[in-house]
Length: 143
Image 1: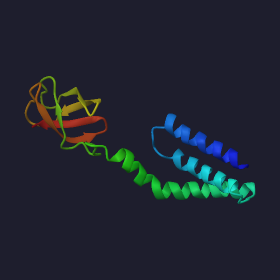
Image 2: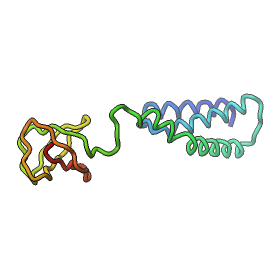
Image 3: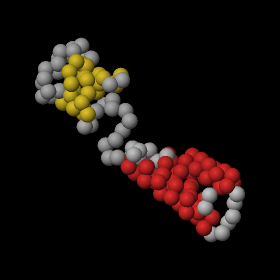
Image 4: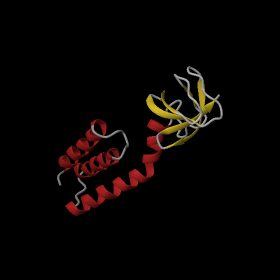
């Protein structure tokens, strides 16, 4: 392929990462690799088509396995207040919740099903501690 076709492929992949994918940083490395292969052709390093595709694949894999996790954590994983495990967080229950019963609450911008796993009822308008998470259900107990 000629150099500008690699550059166009790289730009399309980078654009697809920005507009179509939820910032998982997979297409970024493919786009950068395509750009680098195009840059080598522009600088006069002549390679047959098969060698360009092998270089593209090798660069993509090396960049992805070397830099993706650290880049992703830098941009997405260190959001203030972000933690993978919600155990220990507090939720505000809007209505009275008897032991063993469930309700819906808002937490971290989403609506969740909560179940009172404690021995006492939770009074509406008070906070409850998340004990554990099972699927999409938050198991809570009175504070």
